Image 1 (cartoon, rainbow, N blue to C red):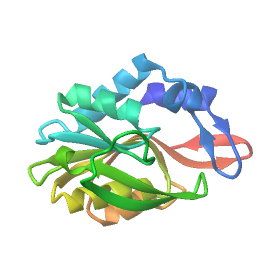
Image 2: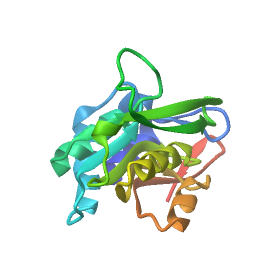
Image 3: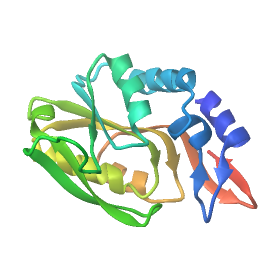
Image 4: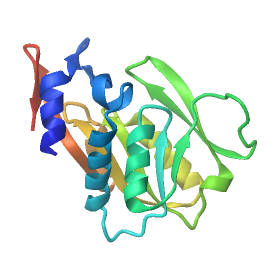
Length: 189
């Protein structure tokens, strides 16, 4: 998606190592018009699939997943990382580790929101090492739901997350692929 690539090159910041910060338009201060176009584009790539739910993890993937779900006309569900307020005691859970935040989390989804009748599209903002998506895969497996594929805004090709998912015979669709970070510049495919 050329518009997303332009925004990455003109606005994204580079953090430590190969950390790419896109919080100024994607996952903290959200540009809803851009996310709506991104959602439509990702939904279009899965046209013809019988998707019944879009699933993401709290919190950075929520905005994008809502726009993908809207374009597909299906519910968006997000796995909670934090035990806040009421959550149904009957949950599917999976342990994940965030390398960016250097902490582990337990993802939880109420059993009433995922079932064996669901065909799920997994959505996230950035695919790096793939740990969040592996956790979402574990949740869908526990629900005996099928996985239609993985849709992400940004794939970091210098990390192995997307390769790992593809080796699992999962369809992975990315709107922008970052090949690397070199000399203070983001290199896109």
